[in-house]
Image (cartoon, rainbow, N blue to C red):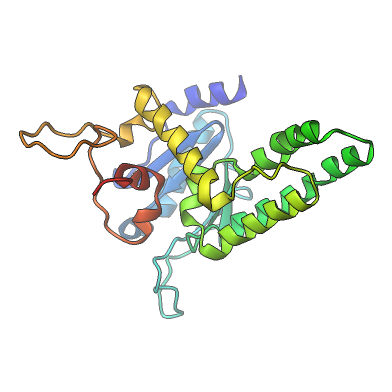
Length: 258
């Protein structure tokens, strides 16, 4: 009942400035400020602290982290950063629901952490192999422990992977195949696994009108023209920057759209 009670209690917690965004999931709260609203950060934090005191809660500033996302090409020393919030650490990356988000908006840090954890999980298949576990059962164990961890939230971060990141993931899978921890029919990460995961999630969103991501997919306006049929009836989102193309929603909406 912990996450449920928190969602009920935090339902009235909203940012002061309407240009700011506040995202709440389970017992985590994320405050997102655009560049033009950086001066409102202290006021927003004070508002959250006052709200917490009114609910007999406490804002733990030691666990609260601040990260600044900057566009590519604006990471030089001449860029003036906003003043840091008092008693809050400014970091270069943070972990949200198990996904490492870097201020560079790349998946390199997440892939490194992911490969580290998956390598540690190889201890279990190695021990089971020494005790004579069959290859079929070994493949089931690998899929349930290592592969499931490797593909966790893949739709959220796979679009930010560079070619080097995908090669590191494929190298890890090839190593597991050589050690006979997994079957050789497991495809490469960048070739099929990411695409199949994206398609499965997008299909669930389209079929479920109450899906949490459904409000990001407005219906397309009715037109009188006979256009080429599309795989979905949703309205396309304008691509404003190269980074925008890596977003999952944008990628899926524009897939196979010629």
